Image (cartoon, rainbow, N blue to C red; front, side, top):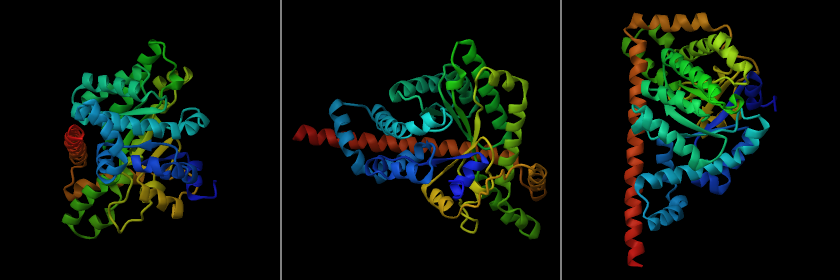
Length: 377
């Protein structure tokens, strides 16, 4: 296995997860093939991916929608049932991975309704509901890392719920996520939970940062800005990893580790390349490091399996000075990096909300049409 690109990635300490889930892939065996043949160790999804799956795979969802229409399900309840059914099947598919890795991998992430992103209590209530409805130990509930979302992250972890804290674009926000994680585990211990059974990742977004920074560098023009193109996202992620190293070296984490806790891993998200001039595996190759996860879309997974350049070693160790130089140069060209990452986080959350609303309308229309046909039959 270590002779393959994906094997060398695992040797470096990175688990490869798939950023895609659909009913069609569950039905035709495509997902099982990726797990068995490409070393996929986990699955993530989000409202946009689910909306695309519903739109492109309507046939696969039709029988389930017929049943939900007969039951008189609301669009919201139907949407949750469709999503939890897929996640339950994917979790069962990954159960051997979960068991063989001692619960480190084999997780499937399902996101809470992003409309609750600024309501900690509603988010925590939904996290509990998703855990109950999926009913699998390898479920990981995705919670947006807004200020209110971080309160829900702490609360969910305190109750023993696996958490994927998502939509992280800045090192400052990641530091708050790490704090929420530590506090949640401390509360879980006081409540009597087995810390070794609680897993968490922090989803740090990558390629969208380069897309936004490169646009500003192109506006600036000249050789110096051009030399910085495609470097900000990796630099930002690497410095987040430096912060992770500080967390796991700290006394709070050492106390939790002694109680059996497992570290919250950084998960590199949005790692499909947006600029066609960049190597299609760059955000996987350049971020290989111990105790990390990289979740990739199907096209990137195929590219990594075919010609990924991981060599079994960390690509982050020894890079921090260069990363600081890259980000330190951006203000020279009028780029406020903190403001840029804040904007990206807001835009990403808005996009997820729009996808969720689109899905709700789509499911509502489908249910109404089916009820009319059922009543006429």
